[in-house]
Each structure stands twice: as C-alpha cells, then as structure tokens.
Image (cartoon, rainbow, N blue to C red; front, top):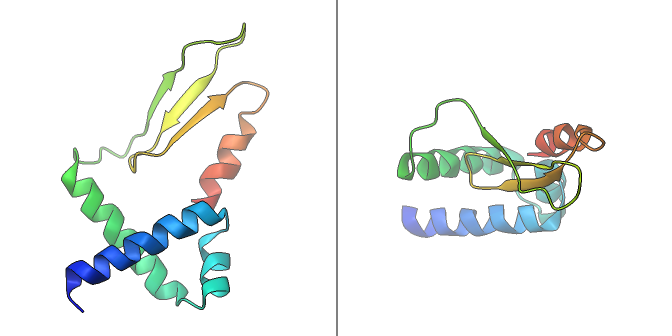
Length: 102
C-alpha cells in the first residue's frame, strides 16, 4: 500500500469517527483500531491540511454571526475548517465541551 493510499484510508477513518459522534478513543475501541495509530494519523493529517492552507498562527478566528434573533450568536471556525455556530451567552459552556472532544 502506498503512502497516498494509506493517507486516504486514514482520512476516511477520521471522517467516519467525526460522523460517529464518539470520542477518538471510543471510536477506535468500537472499530478495533489502534488508538496510537489513530492519534498519529490525526496529527499527520492535520499537519498536511495546515501546510496546504495558511500557516497556523496559534489563534482561532472567532466572528459574530449575523443575528437571527434579538440575541447575538457567535461562530467559531477552527483551523481544520470546522465551524461551530449558534453560540450565545446562555450556551457558551457548550463550546468548551465540544473542544474537549476534538
């Protein structure tokens, strides 16, 4: 198997894990995947994606979303391209819970 094929296979595994809603460790246990290899490839794929886009500055862009209601909502866009929307003062602790799962 070539490196490109292996990279493609692991990218699919990362996509499947994200779609499962499980933590990385729980997903690996369920799928009988080595968690060590999982974290290695997750890091490797993030580095590859980061090198294809702008260099990482260590900061995450946070912008105010257009208010649909009377309360302003925030959108957080992570360097991986994932966007978390609908954050408000009454649910901001949800952001911490989401980030701990990534």
